[in-house]
Length: 591
Image 1 (cartoon, rainbow, N blue to C red):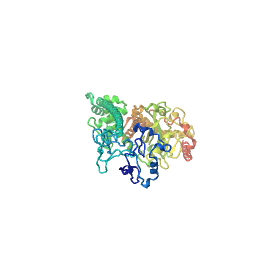
Image 2: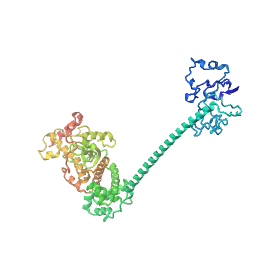
Image 3: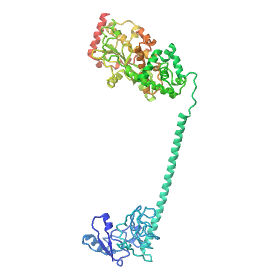
Image 4: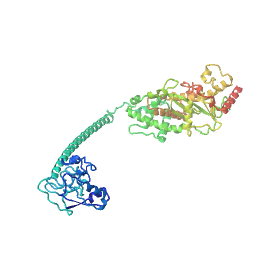
């Protein structure tokens, strides 16, 4: 009678102490199986499959040790010793290269529970008790594994001290079952090896395909880079370089004004200012003088980029890059030059000291209006940029003083937007930069704006614009007289817009640059406008409007015309209406 200790496998699933059971090989019934569990039918021998559906409650007679089994379940704590039948061959539990008690293969002692591929516990190389000699299977990982805990290893006649009992010369039924089980696992391993082989082949094809795609994309990218940046034609040898043409043009007074829209002295002064203070630099291929001449020539003449490419004998990329560099420098200049000279507006302009206007307009500090600049926009934005003039444009709001200097500008709004919306956005969004009128001061606005504190508007529904008075009778009544005087002063903003567009003709038809760049060009032209005006150097375009106060080049109406009906009476300030009536009465009584 042998002793079997279950401490090892019980410790895996339960914390109860190990129990010792005694069984006799002579009393074992060949048709019985272990008391803990019945193996699946696929793992049972043919002689035992009839017990798969055995009902222990109704067929107690068919199970020889049923009484002892029930007694074991009910009296587990009494240390009852039972006579257990020999175990049925059970499926080995194990995976990978785990070690365990095995039977050894047909040709060699056990080699661990890993088997041939290390993926099956209990393979042919890990069976304990083979026909040629039982033994404890060696472990590839240094540990000891176990069979299914429900398996009573009765066939493993091995003492606790590690001695082995030789196997009999004849094969027992359990050995035949082991052979059939080995065949089953061999077939399953063959199927898995075939599956693994196909998976590896599939992954290999995927890698090859991905590698081919990467190589093709890299080749195409390399060809594009070579054709675009490397495979360039030879440098053109111009008969006259761009720098030579600029210097020659600067030497001719008329050509300099026509090409660069300013005199040679102003050109050189502007160049020095941009180089010293606003980051304009020369490069190895183009000097800063040539770059500035290129920019002024495109904006003033105006000229297209391809015309500049031919004139300066440069590549399109160089022309665009240099244009952008000068544009950036001039926009930096705009920050410092488009603002009031005196933020407090302490002085009264000489024009307002005329007997025609004083003392009623002594506190006037400038005029506000908007103008439409034609722009090119994407198709999806054509409708919102099309204003009453019938073309796509930007509604640019500006403020100017009576020296025809722009003191504030907002560009970028679609042409269909009303002036008041641009005006309100300018105050809310750029409140810290906006030149708010001090207490008691006011701007002149047209009929598109309400008459409220700080902003004096004309009488609505009454003749207002100067051409209407020139082509008809002189003003009658105090309201027409006020509107005529108001319009004579406020036309400074219209004349400023006229000089701006007459000098920088790129504003008459902006090229198809990005929308942000178009706005930057508008602001840059206004900065150049102020630079020329502040230089106090004679300029033909400014001289025209200075000598004739009624001369307004490019008269196309203001952006507010036709939008008077949108101004509600409730938007106006009563105090400002009374102030307007006081001015109208004073002008009429003096006439």
